Amino acid sequence: MRTQPFSIMHISDLHRSPRDPITNDELISALVHDRDRYLEEEPRIPAPEAIVVSGDIIQGVPLYTEDFAEKIEEQYSVADEFLTELVHRFLSGDRSRLVMVPGNHDVDWNTAFSALEEVNAEDVPPDLRDELYSEDSLLRWDWKNCKLYRIVDRELYANRLCAFWRFYDQFYSDGIQPPTEQKLRDTRMFVLCEDRIGVAAYNSCHGNDCFAFHGMIEQGSIARSDLDLRDSGKVLDLRIAVWHHSIQGSPYRTDYMDVDVVRGMIGRGFRLGLHGHEHKALATAQEIHLPDSEKMAVVSAGSLCAGSTDLPVGTHRQYNVLEIGRDFCSVRAHVRTMEVANLFSPARLIEFGGISYVDLTWNLPRNAVGGQINTRSIRKMVFIEEAEKAAKTGKPERAVGILKSLNLTVGSYERELYLNAALDAKCWRGILDVINPPTSINELVLRVTAYLQLDDPINAKKVLDSHSSSMRLPESLESDLRYRISVKEALRR
Image 1: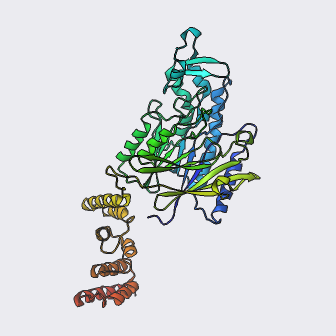
Image 2: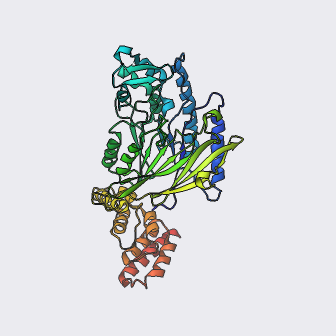
Image 3: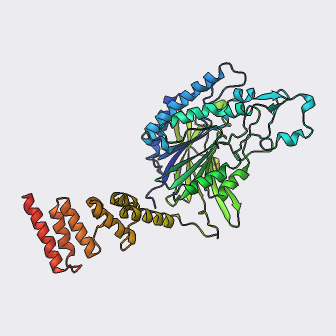
């Protein structure tokens, strides 16, 4: 078990409103000062160890904008500078710990519109409504001009997110993420928290364009990510899903994602979902019944950069800090809000009972027969097998590195395996860290030997004096150890 929660900065909707812009320097300064504040607040919030950006990296440009491609690239340049500085100041420059997905503002409307062709009146299908709202429909309705369009150039239409993926590839250009091919599925996998948390980053803009505002994840993507996580060989305590669109909307709304998509995630073991789009912090628990009730905590981040005209009434710029519980079965979502002088402070939300955070819990995933999956036990077995293989193939240093993350309890096989590997690797400090105090004659000899190898006969003698009698150390063995200590003392004079 971790000694402290795993902390994630969850930001979303970075698009800058033209009428109320905020600079990168103002944002970075506000976030850094807020970290200084919440590290000392009550309840204290630990510093983020990862960052999730749940979409809408840029504002985008309207239809019929001249030089739209150049304007989009300029906006991504600003976003790149911001995220680069954010990773530098919060993650020591480690971009592998930043998870990012696209949002509807990242969709290039002008490219999408270029792939459409107006449908003549005589070619309108008789079942227009059914065809228009069917999954993967090629038809689009323009409510403003009351015109029907059809996607006629699918290859061009697929390029409507190319600017985002170019920005994405550039940001992860050091090989953290594989280069994006538009024809491949729009899902990326990340691993956080020393390989204990797996993150599936989904593109929820499948079929989203200048006339279709709904959220959708391409069919098969969730199942594929489940298989990818299974095939990774990593024993994960928690699966997190990240997408952009909200899953809650009224019958008059057309820009949210069907909650059934999330239920498919829950059934595949995902227990925490993070999204944006609402421009307002929300936290709920979604449930499905398989035969047993299974839950996913779903947390939305408010907009980090949107202006007052783009925010819900009474809402300010916001972001979240998430504390994943040490047992990986809970999250505390802290909401931070920018109310005064472009500085963040704790939000006081009616939805959270007037405080700035909410606690959500979930149950562990279950196996095929309904039993809870004990990831800790599975991880222990995997680590022991890997360490045994490393020790047998002449790689004791690797065995030590694998086993040191386990709880090396007295009398356990993994403790014995660790000490043997540490002895072969001459990892004397590692031996001293584990054998404190010695619990057997063999451990006493190893601790004395480690001190002698580190040229510390004084502590070697103290250990021997303290434990030789209680452990009934054979006289011949004690004499040999004291002789070695005296030799080391003589050499130091």
